[in-house]
Length: 113
Length: 113
Image (cartoon, chains in turn green, cyan):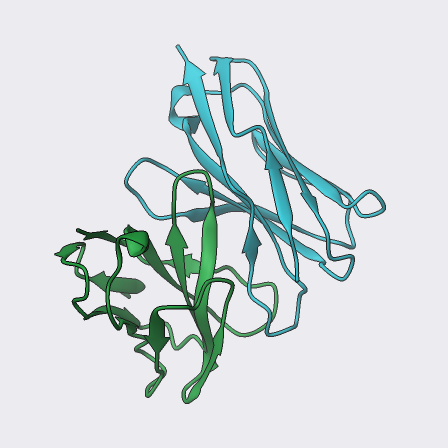
């Protein structure tokens, strides 16, 4: 199993550009999430999904969209990038609502100029 | 929603000494408390977790204690080694619900040789 994969690993955008961060998992997990990691602020939840066709907002959803058309994929879209969105983005997945291990992807380092 | 506070933000110990990281949470309904370790440039990985029906859990050199009355939990690392140097995150969740993990802000642990 590849686990949770993310592409790209690094990305530089100009203010106002849009892009999609890709996330995929091959563990048939129902739950998938997107976090951003900023220095001194831990991991903050952007959006999450409890299954195909179901998404919900997390703590910091503004400026981001998600969709979940399949169990495997959970892309994160930046509609109009802003310097405040410079961060490291982690996708994660887990098997259901219980106390199961959450697995993280390798991360995407995004810089918005 | 849940709020998790983590202290200290940085911690330096001599190799062989013990390290303690503390977290408090606000939602009394939370009953699942994992700890993640993130090495430099890597993804967070689960190292230990505890559920509210136990007060302490050990796994070799690491242990976690939980005080539900006071709403705090702690990570203890004994006989620290240089490879323990990393950022450690605590988290809290209401088990069995759709709510996602809420993370603390992280502790940078440095083990000095």
